[in-house]
Image 1: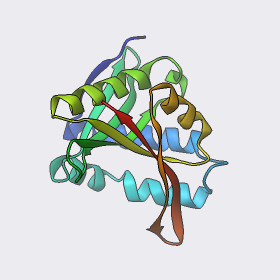
Image 2: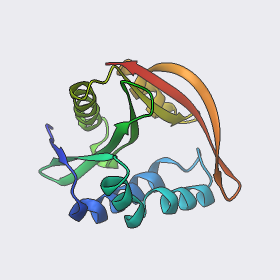
Image 3: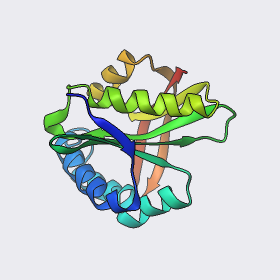
Length: 166
């Protein structure tokens, strides 16, 4: 299944929100509490937040579309470090997982970062998210550091920072 990867537009925001809701509720129970999932979806995936990231925050969203519609998305941007970019989000619709959609999105992000002078790509991943850790390892990401970030309402993100040379 080869997706068409394209830049997301403001009109795509409701579809991104809907897909994030489906993927998070299918994937994160057992890793995060239901309360934290609800909180993070509100905090990171409201239409207002996505619009702000796209318009003012310098975050680029890419969509992967197949004949079945929206199958996944990624969000990425430059960091404050020279030649470093960050993959903020990468989610694939549950029935489309393990079919190469995530790989197409990662490759598109890496190509975009390289085109902008990037030499490294980082991402944060929950320490308990074994499926994602294994997938990122297959793409050459390596452990850089461990972080615990307070995100409000008593919740934290207990993550590994992974890095890959471009």
